[in-house]
Image 1 (cartoon, one colour):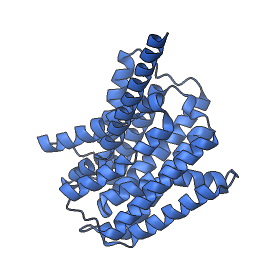
Image 2: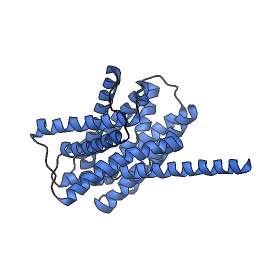
Image 3: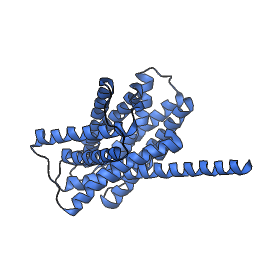
Image 4: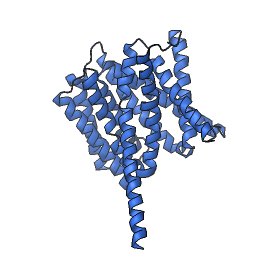
Length: 309
């Protein structure tokens, strides 16, 4: 009997370690998004070009995976269809505003501001949907707001040829639209839709929106040339999008959403480190304190929300 219990505990520990590994890969791989995106923008691609390729490649690869695993992508009802459509629009808004943030302020700071979406979710649930106001959440929200203030008023924010006000505004919008995405997913019960089908449609529809924008607003979709640009595209579409989403789902199934969200702090940390190493970005004390405050606030909110369940 003790042997069975021992084997069960070993299996449980292995599953947990696998989950932590998947969560680390998911958050770290997403943290590469600014590096690949800024490389493509520097090569002359527009925001819409970059996002068309990003979501298009990720969506096509996931669609191939779905067919290989004999998973249906069929939308079963109008109700399911409009939920996917609405959420895909919010996901697309998050993508384009965050990319504008990357291009105009420090990519690490843009990533950190976007990462505070759980704090915004808590804020909206309390003041829009009437959820109980907790002093723990209120303190965390205040800390996050003060963290953003420190980031906005620090020199680390500034990048060469960037529009600081535009970049900061768009980064904040990206956090709010991402929060809206998660709130509506829960309230509309869209999280009950089969995960591969849901994610594939979100990615493909996002790609369609950006391709349309590229042709309507810019007259064309720029063709990718050169090995380096293709490496950026594949890195963005596969490593930072496809693999990040996949490993994130695997992590949630093994260790739950709370620990996965907390380990998600590696995403802005990765973006900050890569920005300093490869994009000539700087990190001063004021901004470092702001980043730490936001990461702590998000962790507190996630853990407190989990304890309330």
